[in-house]
Length: 270
Image (tube, rainbow, N blue to C red; front, top):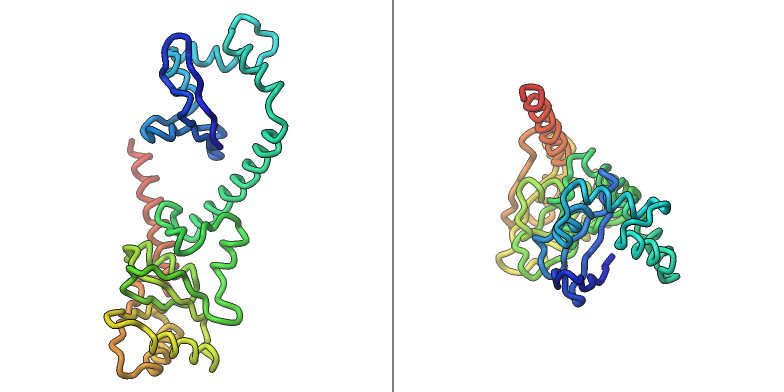
């Protein structure tokens, strides 16, 4: 959401052409802004008031209270805000409601990703999709139902990584990736159709493209790796099993739990 900042009588701190991009922080419940022309200018409404009007923290609080307390008539800025709120453009209300609904879905999806060790900050959304809803996360956790799952390919990609599930691909990228690999997920069983598809993919790779089999380090993972290698016996293929846990997603979950344990210990000692 964007809002055009206006002129202040005290000085032009925010030019009319600048936009403040607003985002609801669902964890704290606060609306936050980022100045589109200066990304370092960001924060809460209190930060904005302090910078724009040079208000103290106590004065910021009084201004915010005056904006929502209709009995207050002593603050001109609050009166102007309430007047704008009453006469806001008709499409704005539904737009805000739609944004908040989408933000809540994304917040829940982020929590679902975190529960399986995938961090939003590490997620290549162009590659794996935005994961904006819990349904999208749930599909990524499952094995491909009928055909292979594949990620988009960048011209700069140098590796094809083959895993069992999309979340294993996300986890591998989180641990070892540098945005130069595209991914396939095969599921736990390779039928004739899937083998034909994999064989065609391997045969059609451009020169210099390497292949990594990032299946689990359990019996199923070893079987899948041998079956794929048999589809291209003359090709050099790297085997990359996780260091611990059955699959790559198990590894990032264990790493995340270990990190949280260390954080709890650190807080208890503070």
